[in-house]
Structure formats: structure tokens, C-alpha cells
Length: 360
Image (cartoon, rainbow, N blue to C red):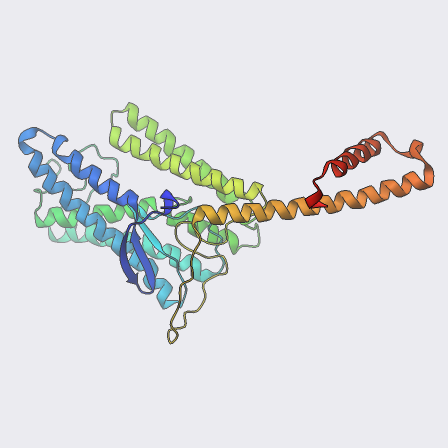
């Protein structure tokens, strides 16, 4: 395991030409929820709550599969190439490397939220028309069975009933839709926003800081709302919002470091690779996947390349200035040099004298 953030130990095969894997975060989340379920309610109903938790977790996996299949199917229909998908509880875990170009990349990014939102709206309408039930629109409800629809103003659908299953499935798609509209990585909204910036003439997202600033503002809002929820007594929602805010901030800092070093990721650390746009797939030819560096190895190599190029440019500029100063010294004498030129001459000369022999 070279990088915990890219550790997806369970492969789910190829969906429409896209390799899909289960990220370790999703495994830990499911395990944590199942272990916590029997203790969330009274001991005599603990097994019942465990069954309900296992049921909505299964629906979550189905909603995630549909969400990511929409991305993969759109890429397939547009004849685009999409890198590996790493499923985590909120979609596909992607890092601060997104450099989208082209309308096709934006269509692929928005496909997942669109299908999740359409499912949520369709289920909400169906529950109201057919079952006379009310869909749960409040994502911060403090009810124990938060996703169960309401039969009337005071009664929720019976656990594990047909209305309960349908309502919970719609609610989970609704959550995926809302979360993936956030204009920050690792969410689809962040990839869509970067695609918009990359395709507008107003600002170049690769060189600007609009995307990181927007992501940081999003993280700050989520953090504040999470703190408010904590003080309101809702530990689960509060901790979740704060955790998402911290995750976004970590990605922003990594992105900022790359921009400060003068470089930028060209391919996805955790998911999509939009650096050169989508390329056509040759269906008739066998594709041999070369060895791929880990995210950490790519970041170190590229940072080293950027620093080496910057050092070479600095040394070349210093050599040109040194030639100019020496020429001035030869023609006009040392008294003609300014204080700054004399300091520069002393500093660079000392560095050249002390430079190792291997670098000469």
C-alpha cells in the first residue's frame, strides 16, 4: 500500500470501460455503522436497528453504483476515457489534480448528480401520488430513522416495509445529489467547476486560485454549520460536516502547494484524468495498461522536476548578470559598481568557489 488515500482493496470490475474499486473509507464506514447500530437504541431493539442499518447501507451501495455507473456510461457514450473510480460513502474519491478541458469532461462530471437527483425527484413524486407518503427533504433531521418517509405528519413508514425501502433509497440519492453539488474536490461539483474554469476565457483555472478559494470557502461554511450542529446536540451530523470540511481543506492545501511550486497535477490522484481531455478508445486493439506510479511518487517526481527547472533558470539568469557585472568592472573599474552589484558579485562568486566539484 503505497498511499492510503488511493487504497481501494476490493475491485468491482470494469463498468462501461471504467475500472471501479471500493475504497477503504467505504469499507470502514460500513463496518463502523454496523458495529454502532445495536448500541444506538435500547438493548431490546438493538437487533432490529441492526437490520435497518444493514438495509439502508445496502441501498447506499446501490445508489453509489448507479451514481458512478452514470459517469462511466456517459464517458462511454461520448467515447471518452475515464480513469479508475474509487468508491467512498459520497461518490468517487478524487484529489487536487483535476485539470479538465472540453465540454465532454463537464458532461461526465455532471452525469452522476443528475441521475441521483432525478431518482430522488421521481421517488418523491411516486411516494406522494401512489402511497400518499411524504418524502424526507431535510438532510439534517434528528429522527433516528432519518430517511423513512412520513405516512402522515406524525407517523413514519414501518421499518423494512416497501414504502420504507423506496423512501430510504430516494433519500440516499438525494444526499448524493446535494453533496456532489459542492464546488470543491473530492465532489463532482468541484470537477464540474474546474471544467467550467478551464473552458472559460475569463480565467485559467490551472494558473488561477479561484477554484482553491471557492473550495476553502465551502469548507469554512461546512465547518461552521458542523459546529452549530454539534452545539445543538446533533453529534453525528456535526462531526460529518466537520470531517468533510477538513477533507476539503486538505485537498486545497495540497493543491496550493502544487501551485506554489509552479506545477500542477496532470492526472488524477484518486480518479479522473482530464489533463489532455478525453481520448478515443480503440475497441479493436488490446490495451496494455502500463505500470502506474502512485500518487505520492508522481507528486515527488514532478515537484523535483519543477524545482530543478527553476534552479537551472535561476543559475542561467545569475550567470548572465555576472557577465554583465564583470564587463562593467573591466571597463569602468570597481568604483563604478553599485552596492547591490558588489554584494551580488561577492555572493555568487563565493557560491561558485564552494560548489562541489561534481556540479562543475
